[in-house]
Image (cartoon, rainbow, N blue to C red; front, side, top):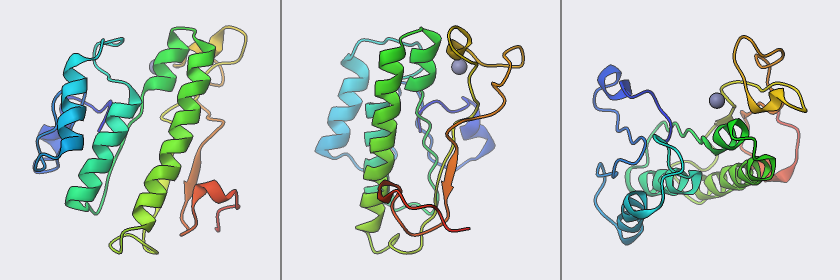
Length: 169
Ligand SMILES: [Zn+2]
């Protein structure tokens, strides 16, 4: 869900995909999902192919509750978009929200017997960024240090990220 390759559906038939501003219809409608789909249609579109992370994340939560999938991939794009635009405060706000979303997802999974005690959550950016004061806005092969990431983590434990504990090896 979120910013995913447009041809992912073709490469993984039967794997529900929701990207961009498309309404998510792969699960039975709920009041929450109806509102999320309406907001995708009605909110201003700051970026061409990507809604705000709140829409993407909360759609993913509805999917988890309805389908209880064995795997889930969620791509949040606001930090990248705000950084490219040079809005540092918005970039930090988006990173903080992403952190909150990880905690929310973990807490939801731990509240469900299908996931409690048997789920691994992996969180990783897809790339790093350049250095301050200018290159933090960009990434790619021409940006030094963008191939490394400063905040990659994986949690192969059954402890919530919010606990602040060091993940077990
Ligand atoms: Zn980017």
